[in-house]
Length: 87
Image (cartoon, rainbow, N blue to C red; front, side, top):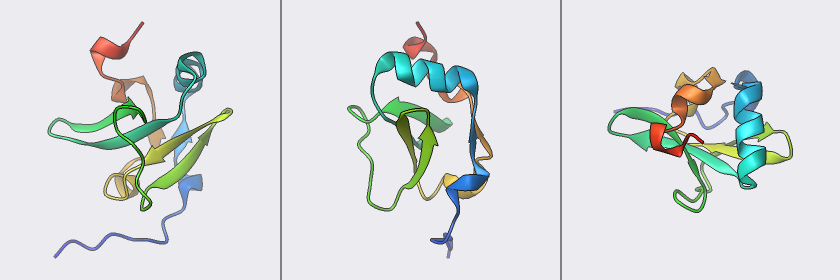
C-alpha cells in the first residue's frame, strides 16, 4: 500500500521566476496533477484543485499540487508546462 504524507509542507517546493511570470500573464491559478507522462502544470479551468492538494504561492497566484505529486516535487519550472501551452 502507498502511504501519502498529509502533513507535507509546501515550503519545500520552489517556483521558478519564469513560471511565476507565465501564470501571472495567464491570469489564473494552476494545478500540478498526475498524467501518464508524469507531473504536468495546467490551468485550474482544465484541472480543478482538490481539497487534498498542497497549495504553493506563486506571485499573486496559487499553484495546487496533487498530494500524490507533492512529496516528489522540489521545483515547479517550465518543464511541467505542456509544449502546446507555451506562448
